[in-house]
Image 1 (tube, rainbow, N blue to C red):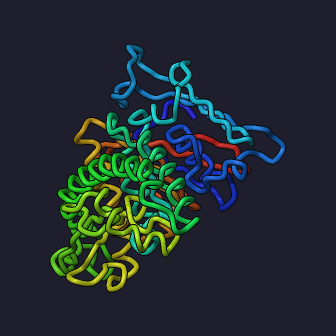
Image 2: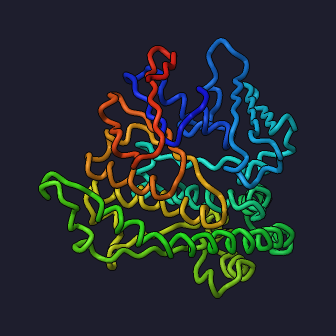
Length: 371
């Protein structure tokens, strides 16, 4: 697929391979599929590895240092979980060097777990934004934290140990936790600052059948939404993690693991005093999730980091009015979009707002560009 336009609409029957196109773009960006972290399930059963190559405009990605019009990127993943990444033919020392090169935001059926799913889903969402800030150092910090956490938990499982035995790992946890939480909190504050405006714009742009094809008035009737961030331990904004570890030691020894920390961080979205996921309708919840994704990309865009959106069968999740509103927001963000649907009619030309559009049909894994 070459000479791709701003909006790329891909349709085909279920199982035809259209989502694999989105997976390929995601693999270029993060070296993995968005459907599974186990690449063995993505590699063809008769192959030892997979390879994805692509080209992108250097003006799109400020993270690359190239004077050429186009930059190339390639990713190879083996069944042994070996990863090889090259940008402009140069091997990257770590996946962390991909930060900011090709950020991709996914909206698919699994995305709607963001509000109702586990805290881990929301941490992953927040960390996606932190990772793509070029000099956040998050990709290096998080493995350090996880390693220290594993070592501390291993010692805690022994039981009846002195605090001095834990001291080296406590020090490493405290040091990395401070930096990780600061990076997360900084990104969260930026996200929260733009979320409400994006959400209300989505609601205002919804054209619902019940409203006689007029913009929805839901934006005026929805209760105020608030976003709150938890760093993963009590009073994280006033109590250091080193102090929290000291205070929690007795309970950690009893439990046999480190109960609190950045690995328990979460985002809490509330409607008044109640959790939004408990009181809002499915349609409202899905609209909120789309608003969160759009707001996050708007934050990155303000820092000179544009996003590619991968949208998998949105028409199956949202009504036509809400789909139209989401695409209006994408037009305003001025991002490139790859969107799939079962039927070509599920993706409307007028959603592109006059931006360039190219359509593709997929059948049995074969991609055909349509005139």
